Length: 290
Image (cartoon, rainbow, N blue to C red; front, side, top):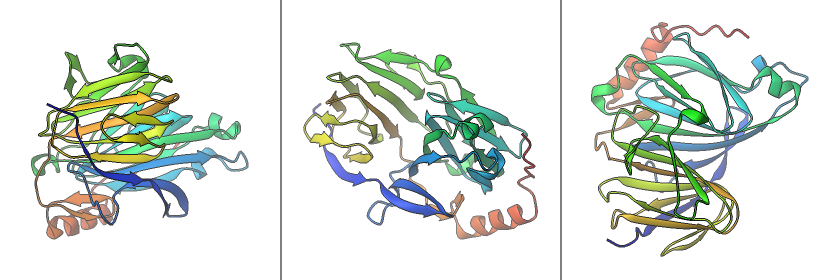
């Protein structure tokens, strides 16, 4: 088959998340989701050593019904949750939390990063869960870069880390609630890489850094989200300079979706149940400690 054509090019735009400015590529007014992908945030924070790490970053907040996945591009992030998980993830690493029936977590910088007045750059991707898994017991997965399977392009200039799914005899590092192929790629200038993705999967590409040329489409700039049509199976990129991108593919869940802030369910009644359960403390309690 030929090359996938592009349905939308979405430049990430500024949004204010409770006083924190970040870039958002999904959702938009035109594209609410690309099933099963709900949200893509690109955050770049500079920290101030005059305030402790515990008072910076994103404080405790709840989730239910989906998986927030965090890719650490630069710096460090400290995840804590009401299930007792406490993990520091560094550049090149990934944290995958399935919120399931409900969990409270926080996302802070490390104290070392604050002391250095360093930068934290992350991508957070929200992936919907099928109804049968929305009320599962919450789970947390973390992998170092060394524990993530990788493969290279023919010219050896593009390193592809397989985050989830099965691709070319490689198995992804993270278990998912639905069928996914998630690839995190780092390309050196002039590097070319080709991918074959089943047209039954919804696919999109987010360019984190650099500039690439997409076969059959043209140039893609940093912080652009490309949403592909399901009309072919091939994707080919060529890096104009050093670049980094996420290639995200997933089988559509095709279920009714009702979202209210951090809760993603299948009906308004389930949303009300989530709000009640959170207020009653059924999602646990997170007391942050250094």
